[in-house]
Length: 480
Image (tube, rainbow, N blue to C red):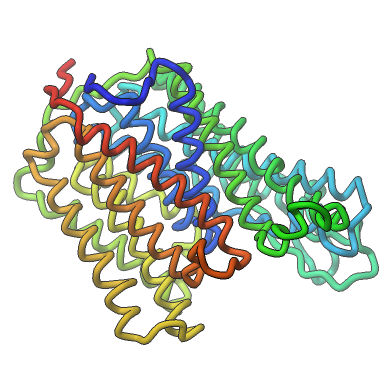
């Protein structure tokens, strides 16, 4: 293994660095939306753990593992959770302890399944079992069927017009606010849980993937603890504002974005849990034996993976920024978003590199432009085009092309993973910095400054890890 300034034989590195990566990724996710925003955290955490525990792998195999975790982190974005948070802190529910407890239970259930998917697929990428594209083709279709069964079983009936809601329901409910006009949202947690359990049984038991089986549970624990813990902090502030009027809080509280700190806390805990899980089970990390490690696909249909990847990107862009009703509805579902990328990631490692870099960046760049140029008019159009779209997408696209070359794919993972993490995290930090209206720490503090400082600390930590791998001596790839 390449030398590093970080001691990965101790759990501190895995917990601290994966926690910071998750805290930054999930905290930034809050500005950009559910599925595509969550992919940021998946890429950051998985890249940190590959740099820590599998830097000697072939880059083709490492890219697959990172990309699998990246797209899987988006699955839970189909859930609704804002009204569950509301049960714990809405003004007309302050003091209602049963509603507070019920809201936190709902967040634990939703957070657990969200990160459970990422843990499962991260384990599938690191566990040495070779998964094939046709398994993803059939498997995700089965998961969609399980999702429908679970949703029909526990997330129905749903008829807000007649005040008919599911028996187990964690959003705005008339049993807590009988005299208030509510707009309940359809929940999906039961469908996702049944899909996750089906995938867990298939990968963990049918395919014998012990690491996937274990990391899924670590993901569930991280999500089930992290989400309610972050909201406990935010709800404490909502319930006891008087306790933040003295001492340092009297100065700091006006600058605190408690919602974003809830998200950053959730991300930190879930990232730390995944890191600790990987550390505990590091002896189970195995590189997948590949017959074509250098590239990818050859022959008559060599163009097909990239063609399908382009189709996925177009559908993603249309669903995020267009108004084509059928596409927007279809691509607003986490399992649908998982389907085509997972097939392509397992088919062609070049697609894996594209998924973890430009496919993850483009929705974030587009949303930054949409918010700061079209809605807020924060910057001129030319600056937004150059700084939010052209430079980030072009540079990450070039990086992706270089890292997807046959020479790179057949070499060790340490340096390509480091460059990928540096490239994406740097641009994501910049886009969020602009989204926060440039909260320089030496300027007058806003409610976004403390979060941006935390993201900066996380960025520096990830950059330090990446630099340590870039400066380490080269090794030859594993060949099991």
